[in-house]
Image (cartoon, rainbow, N blue to C red; front, side):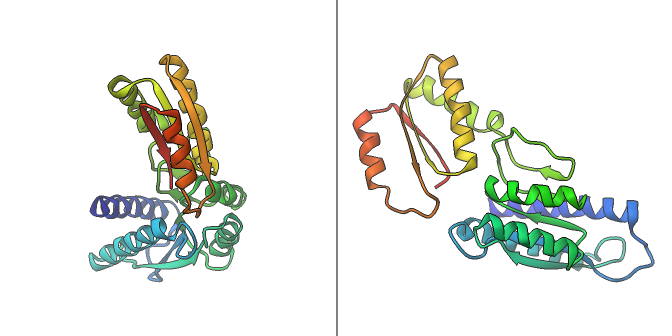
Length: 229
């Protein structure tokens, strides 16, 4: 999984570098190209985002080891989003205005992406967003690289109802992506003549799941669809 993630990030870095070079860069300029990395290395989401920081850094190292892009090396500027939307927004503006990066690779939760989106658009900059998301959004300044519900969740829900039954419970972390995804799932379940027998949310970072598990057990669902814990 991590090897595939590293390979995907490397290919994305190469793509954006070619775009930067061919459209606006002076080929005689030998200064490094700055790449912004905006992910959480602290807080609740660090356990997920630190691996993406590492993979992006590794991709940069591999590109540099192979000669860089059109003769120029890459350098990274890493900012900790601190698992907080406001910190992500501040970090994005710093990367653009102070650090002068050519592109930003960052955000994990949809909540952090939505905080960064207006800043990226205001400065006509570019963000690569690396994970699956709920869809329902588009921007000329954001490359959404992850799956949307119709590519990931919808087939899984259909398979689950056909294999296990049509009594479904929903359990999720409480933020943008799970809420939006569950709205879409509930519409799908209506079309499948299936029923939602319970819907449960926990704040990000909450580790006390006992009450949720007991509540789910009481409803006796055929399966439980979970999004992000």
